[in-house]
Length: 530
Ligand code: ADP
Ligand code: XUL
Image 1 (cartoon, helix red, strand yellow):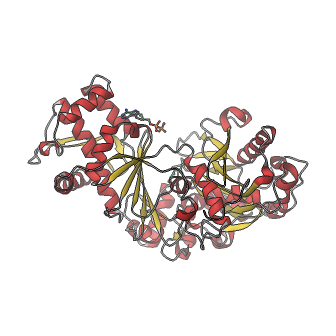
Image 2 (cartoon, helix red, strand yellow; image 1 turned 60 degrees about the vertical axis):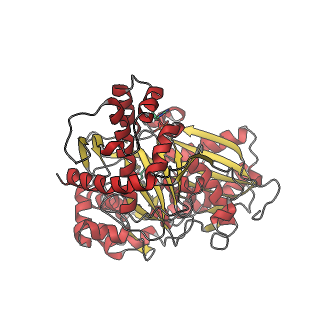
Image 3 (tube, protein in one colour; image 1 turned 135 degrees about the horizontal axis):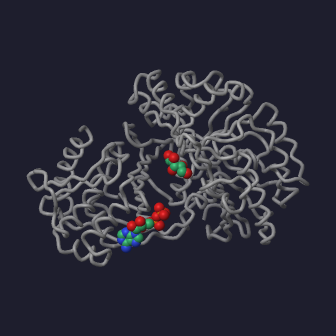
């Protein structure tokens, strides 16, 4: 086993929208501790709802930067009271909500260097920020800045080719551009701009942490092919931005020892290493131990796909990031808003609110649904940009309704054909070793998993990974300590629990769904265009 040592632990933190979490694993990768601090309830003085403030325009969404610092104080104190032995932590890493940004005022770096262990962190750095309220990923106030950036780089597709995504309101470059336009003094007095993840790493380091290449890909600023800032994108957003962002590093970078503040106050070992933090989605990819050829299909309220890509094909939909465990590879993130709630709606209409009845209706229909195809975008879909409910028979004629059994199969086949289509649109190829790793509420339904196996013509495994982002942080801490470029991440996590095989494709699935996919693609394209 890669470098196993008795007694030592690895810590992962997750600075997410609603809470800060910590999770520790031992050297055998078993989870030995978890703790969390909820912003709304544990720190009510900041008056957040869901960890943020939605401003009157309904578009601007921020969180008080210092709240995140105080949450860390509370979290570490709690762990100390619970008897957590910080001296055993060999390395720590973590994640942050993607895209959010922190503005360090001139002089903040020297404040980080001089932290005094007898005082809480938040008291010492409360005056270190030139912007008090960090814009977060829920912000959608920067449409104008996105248009400017796309125009400056030669169009939306060109921006996607370079940075992995077309212009998105929440992406940090556009947020920085807005701050520069609206509050030039604050921008000019910022000596450093961090992402939420690199900000969190900076607290542990007692110095500015670089931005990692993977979360850095969520800014519309990084050239994901050359793995360095795209100067034209920086120039289009704000002056002198390169200096303020610092040089990006691979996500497994071992950044140095933990600040003496944490050694003296909490009993960390002075040898404890801080490994670069990354985005929460990237952390989940690591926590779920995605490998080349794998797809994660997360079916919570909405459906999200994580893909491991070697040759990405940036598109006008979805996001391509540098891969967080292998900087020569990529990951894609695709969000589908019409997921579980759409399936649930059809269960309620066609199957008397019962998943059992839903499963029976599904079993009563043949794979391929006699050529019937349904597309159910109850609410405005993200991937693709379209809305409405559409039904077609085997000769592509629009239908007003389907029988309940046809409707049940149509929603599942339509949704998973869409997941596969859009995965292939950004460069994913289903190879013979492809595994679909299913997670989230709907992954408890084996009938649904069978449809996924057939549509993808791949084995489906179920993953029951709680706190995957945090767990990914702990795994990545170990990877970084062992030298991220020397040991493959897959070796480091080899001893983690096996996945459970849940569904295997039927022998006729390839033929049926290859044909159906072609038809689905043409029908969906028509809908998206109109
Ligand atoms: P989130 O993390 O977004 O809150 P969850 O991962 O808890 O969501 O998933 C919740 C969803 O799981 C529900 O909306 C429900 O539709 C779906 N779900 C739960 N059980 C089943 C089932 N047996 N079959 C299909 N879907 C299910
Ligand atoms: C991803 C995104 C969200 C945040 C949530 O692009 O905006 O998933 O990372 O924490």
